[in-house]
Image (cartoon, rainbow, N blue to C red; front, side, top):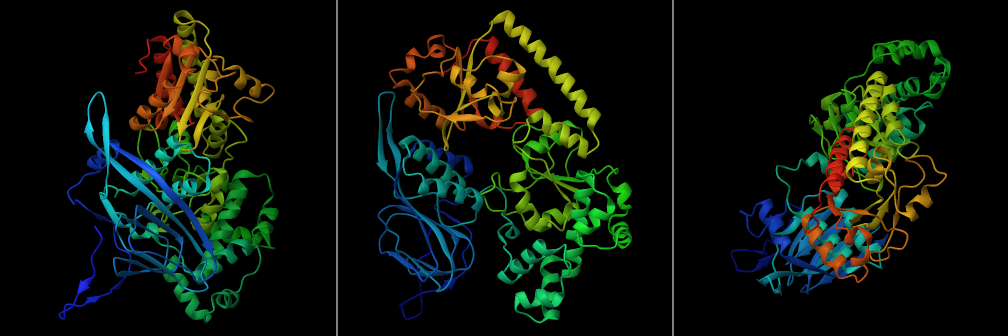
Length: 572
């Protein structure tokens, strides 16, 4: 709950300037399960969502908030005053207020501002029977006050609420529900390092080093950029990065050289010049001292201590028999490596601390292209970063590329052979029990309804099982390579022309969403005429189990698809 102004011995109220603290709960005994239950019987109504961006002094105040109000300060330096209590804000922060709160924001002059202000109402079920439900406005909240991340998820949802003007009521409900789920405190402590950002002097010099590592960089130049004396700058840099500036530059150069040696056919002389060494023999000596191998033999070494920054590539590595020392994780995995908190999309900020990577001391970092720039920015000096492009090929291409990097080409071939035999057995069983059917696969998430093709959700049905998609999907696929070129199309529920199919699968992210989906779909007058509905062949599937486009998960999806297509479904 919000802390009230303190009172001195004279009975007068005094204001206290503090740093943002951990989130406060209105009920300290409330568990995460109870908080989820709190939302299951709730309706959320968006009142206003705005993005504030400017570069001048700014202030905002509400003496008595009429609605629940959430403020996410992505870029903001100044102070927040809640019920008279002042808090200093010097980095990204988030604050949740209940109706009736007095709230003020004051920015410092000459600082860039980027913040989101979201007003909403919350209604809870007061009476619930089979015939009706009665909702009453809820003024309280299980969590209020300062929110301790995860900021990458908060920003993603806040941006969607403020930038998409033509949202349906269903989409707003889903976005607000996702936001509040994100704001509940997670189980276990949140480490401060995950919220730590480099100061401006460090950001500017690190960026300069990343952009100019192939050229001569003098300590005096870096100190000048930082506005410090060279010796003082070097001391501060080492304390922050655990290596001095010259060591940092050397590690950038050597890691870039390792990437080129593993992924290109360049001669040693050309590799040396690309990373800033004119003398290839001097480069070779420095490389051997740093890596323990000569450049000519480095690419042939087997690297086992691998970090995966992409959950599909984590799946690929484990399919090949390699458990990463740390990884982004989602979906089913046979073993669980150390989990990293990393952005799922390129536009989300990076919040994982450097120490997590230093602790596992990786030989190699594997990533998709959408995270490569951020990886280079944060951990380019820790290990070579190998990028496997996501959209240039399909899942089979990803597997073969990763296998070549980690020297597991034979393991990849064996998995592909086993998968094809398994898919052929499944195809035969479906032909024998069901016959040739058309299948439509759609997802319903905060991003809106989508109908998928032969990549991601559709891979198992259209490629492994060789079933036919709806006409509109088939037309889009014509002339395009399998799994590349067309992934999904947006559609409006009820507009089924060209999307009819004998079997319809709908992927949702929660049971609450499933209930809402049923309500939305079944009131549509065209719903009952959809072929799959008339045939009783509609399946609701778990989005989280089907979103991972990688080998281990695909095999599990194949088993589930076979069961759905050869057994009587139960939609309700």
